[in-house]
Length: 373
Image (cartoon, rainbow, N blue to C red; front, side, top):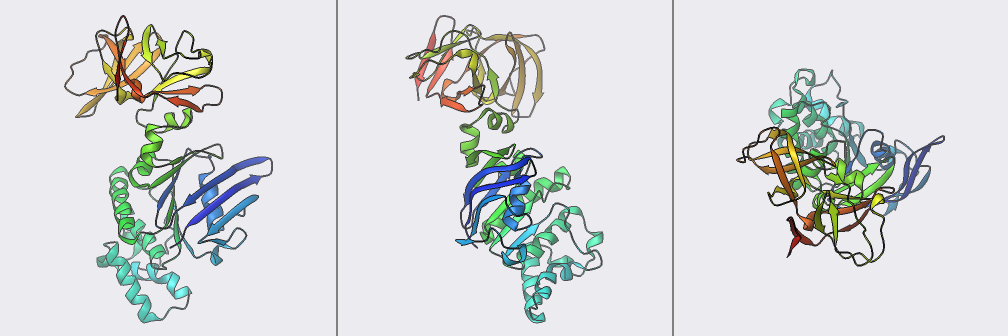
């Protein structure tokens, strides 16, 4: 396996720029996920790493070797497609072994490696079955087996679970991560599904309009989103964005959110509130009868151990994740307390995060009680 290094990668199709100045490193043995909505440039980036598309600019290094302008067959990579791309006239054994056959590998070695790979994927009992009669999950295992049997430098996967139903997809997410833990293969995985990304990735690159908005571990991206897009794209439900009044001048330590005081880190420069938004995750909001930030219950989503409660306030809908045992009815008036240790401030124009708070605040009528954490 090998490290993948992407430097200032760019791809344009005429006047349309699909990928803009991308920079990232996939460490040897790392499971790296490119996450973003359709059309964000993630698949184009993957195809450039594979050699299926040539970049307009930048550099791609595989194992320290510059492969930017090399053809796909010269890069020693394995590509797993969304639509399996299996040979329907061949059985499972022949599908898995076909790359080795094309390379001229001796028959005895092909048989050994195919059986070893099938056992790893738990499909050794299907080797003599026709692929056309297999369930979607088993067909995807065959496609993975055909990639694994080659023992390439890295694996590239383009939404390989996209055609599976929910039950199979959840199972395959678990099995893919378990497989990675066993073989420690350098993997670049493309998806638009945040659940897949957060469940499997060691590192994630979140893309939007051809730009990598944030690169980091799942925890870093969830807890400290770098932009409003990342904060909104990651999380179910996503982060709440709240407007606030009053001045945010140099030395200020609190802001007013719909009449309630919220502690923030001391600011070092004047910031216009009209150009800012406060962001907070639903699980960092709780009910507090003493808070001035109030609203009426709009609806609830029961999830077993918790429930998502939508509260209609004067500034719009705020969603909170609260314990399931709290009994709520539509129209009930509630107060909301924000954990200031978990809030973020964003510039509305650029969407970038300005700073993250470091205190825990309970909002009351008169003032904010600050707990240092």
